[in-house]
Image (tube, rainbow, N blue to C red; front, side, top):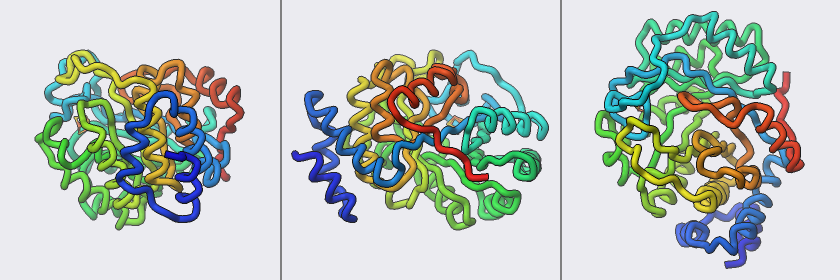
Amino acid sequence: MKWNELSKRVLKGGSLTHDEALAIMESPDDDLLAVLDAAFTVRRHYFGRGMSIHVIRNAKSGLCTENCSFCSQSVVSESEIPKYPMQSVEQILEGAREAHTLTAVRYCIVTSGRTPSEKDLDTICEAARQIKSEVPIQICTSLGLLSEKQAKRLKDAGVDRYNHNLESAERFYSSFCTTHAYADRVATARIAKAAGLELCSGGLVGMGETIEDRIALAFALRNLDADSIPLNFLDPRPGTPLAGLLRLTPSDCLRTLAMFRFVNPDREIRIAGGREACIGSMQVLSLYAANSMFTIGYLTTPGQGYQADMDMIKQAGFTVTEIIE
Ligand code: SF4
């Protein structure tokens, strides 16, 4: 496969075929730099060398009723994690101020649980209003399954984007979660989009899915018209049903990122949870496919640290994308 021919065709508006996605995923390690170089041609066309920085806020942690087997906050997890109810408006607002000082373009407020209660939604909406009046930062919320009415409330409060990951392929979904269905996730993603919220939807790789499942996820997100695609890499959490799995190799993670870039050429692709643990010393190569990242850690795990993230971006000749105030 001539990888650069692929990027030329994608930039002319052509779509990646399933077989081409498969060829990327099955490419040998000797081709890894060539694959990433081709993905970078596409990434650079749409986003230059900019990296968008996101800061995530776990505003309500643990005690979830759902049984997603990868998640340390689930009802089936015995992980020792902080568990607390909904934070206050002031705490969430303070987190937005901190995120802004870290040059984040977006502040992602996340709560555990199947769906937000009315009381929790009141808190989130009030926090969003106050953030919008004070802090120049985009707001994303990730609160579980949503009704149309709830989505409208978020939009009216000033929330810009809603996160709801498909997580994996439809075929594979019931092997790691049975308390809600893949179709429920698709429905919420569509509701968010219909309410005028940008859609952030991605997934988690390394749960034992096949390469075909990863390809199916990349195309499903394209069909959903996801504006932003976070890709998480399973770092098996002690106390969860997936604790015994092995991590993906760095090369496998990087090929997956490249394939997602080709399938969704002009979408924001974010390196998310597990990048430090799974990609390790090759993390910097992920910047050639992804144009967005979380800093200062994830929901229940720390990252490599803000300064290490900034050094990685700058030393590789990339730039932090600035928010337009
Ligand atoms: S719904 Fe969210 S918080 Fe709850 S178990 Fe699943 S991934 Fe974890």
